[in-house]
Length: 62
Image (tube, one colour):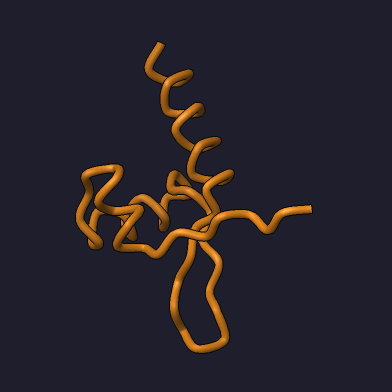
């Protein structure tokens, strides 16, 4: 089984066109993709979680 692709936060922010501050405000409201914090403090988002988030955004906009 292949490991899921894990994206750096800067890659996610670039893809969704959002600032870090706006992302963390959305996260505080429970509206951002799920993040995973590594033991060294770095943050990652799985491609699967980001794609699911995009799908939820499309559904709520419709």
